[in-house]
Amino acid sequence: MRVSDFDFHLPPENIALRPAEPRDGAKLLLVDPSRAGRFSNHIVRDLPSLLREGDALVFNDTKVIPARLDGLRRRPGGAGASIEAMLHQRIGPERWKAFARPGKRIAVGDTIAFGDALSAEVEAKGESGEVTLRFSLAGPQLDIAIATVGHVPLPPYIASKRAEDQRDRQDYQTVYARADGAVAAPTAGLHFTPELLQRLDAAGISRHFVTLHVGAGTFLPVKGEEIAEHKMHAEFGVITSETAAVLNETRLRGGRLIAVGTTSLRLLESAAAEDGTIQPFADETAIFITPGYRFRTADALMTNFHLPRSTLMMLVSAFAGYDVMQAAYAYAIAQGYRFYSYGDSSLLWRAAC
Figure (cartoon, rainbow, N blue to C red):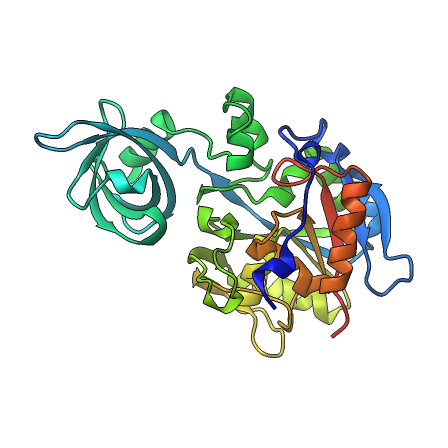
């Protein structure tokens, strides 16, 4: 298959610039490839009635940091230039990989000042504007500085339409976020409220947490036309031995695993043995899931509606079936579903192998 097979036209009015209020009032499209009437319309608040007692939800508890930094290049004898750095992967106490714009304006050895108290040296420069930055602070001091000068890393299709504001600091974070490190939100989880979580508990639907620090590279459009040539950026993830054990036990008892978000699903698949047993995991993953992939873990996937030509569009097509997802997206657009990070949700049941 080619990248163009995952393209579609989305009217601008279908792009969400703010989340639904309340969060669990967003629309939810149920997609079941095994049923003749494959699509049905719900709201996220209906989720307890769409699952059954003994099922298990798997959430990604990563926490978004204010990863967009505005800086000024400093070069001896040269004029300053405005630089935007989008942090996407921490590689040491004082070092981050980042996407810099405009990349042509910076070179290895340059210093970028992010305000008066924080600067970074460009240690290395890669493809597509990726750079390695060594900051003037390290560890917790660097974390505090980034939190002070950084901005919420809103996706470009939102940032190009409006400025970030204080409301985004709350809206672009799940209510259960715990582990600092993501530079993009695991957006399927944005729909959950404390009240919805309590109702799921009361219905006997358990919840479990894994951690995948989402990097900006996950959401980049695929360049070129050959899928096989695309290289995923690595992201660090953790599944504890306790969580792996309880998820395996759930499956043995006949319970179903519902991955909340593509990040949770990618991490589960990265940690799965050939027989589907979920192993403890603490490593980087660059798993790239496209149609033809054989899933070993989740029975269902709760996820938002994704960008055309993206790796996530390929993943959902692999999970529920290419033709099914083509029809589902056309249906969602016609029904006025809101797309992307702040948009509505879907619950996809896995297609039969």
